[in-house]
Image (cartoon, rainbow, N blue to C red):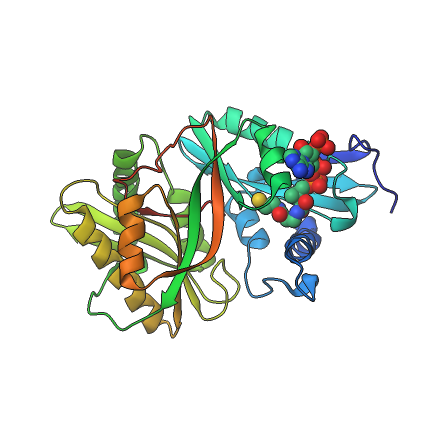
Length: 319
Ligand SMILES: CC(C)(COP(=O)(O)OP(=O)(O)OC[C@H]1O[C@@H](n2cnc3c(N)ncnc32)[C@H](O)[C@@H]1OP(=O)(O)O)[C@@H](O)C(=O)NCCC(=O)NCCS
């Protein structure tokens, strides 16, 4: 396949189709595997799924760069109401540094504009001047580190209420309560598409902690191979606690609930990402025995902290 010119000419960016998924996933794995220098890049993260599941969640938010009848790369945008992020963004390694990522990012920014998001961000490699320089061109600035952390799951007594155990109408009410809770942290923040994806694609479970009539906390978890968790893992994709005086205690109960889920599913490891500017949450996780295995950086547009604030008990990492 011939290479595009330096300006990415010959590259056509278009919505991802179902027929693109297998090749987009191959490129995604080989791109990360090559960048990280693993021995068999094509097998990188082979037990984790991002491409098929994100496309199914929102096909209109998945873009590919087509080149001469094949694919050169892809990108996924995520719409969380008033906030959006993108990734995984990947380009075939033999086509790097030919502006293909930038060709994918321009229409990604158009999507953010169309969605009317207030702020946007991304997670990237803190040690890579290329990544940071690339995203700065689109108005994103490096702010705080984000720690991807993990611990062995331990047996816990907290028995969480599972969304899947509720009747259909009660599930809908619970999802509305989740939206209200995130709105109280950052106006318009809405992760109900993640809850819907877990529910419809059977990726794991959403856990709910009620305090009387209102929701104290919830966690959207991916479980095992074929999800963002990978084999043997329970991955907290997003979790949030209602702000206020009881937040710290509710955060502990929520983490207990996630460990309970992991053990119940026969998964030995719990993985969760937290932005280090959410200082109280990060410290609680360190004290619980979580250890960081990847340090990345959150980049923000327009250089604003969004909901990465010291009093916020949220777990997510924008990967
Ligand atoms: C990261 C990735 C998507 C970039 O794709 P690409 O098509 O090579 O990127 P582009 O050619 O569009 O842009 C490269 C830009 O990086 C920036 N850059 C590179 N080196 C830089 C440096 N040392 N300092 C500052 N900026 C730098 C420049 O802005 C450059 O654009 P320019 O040539 O116009 O100046 C690709 O390398 C990849 O797939 N990597 C593996 C997977 C990955 O890391 N994905 C992103 C995760 S957040």
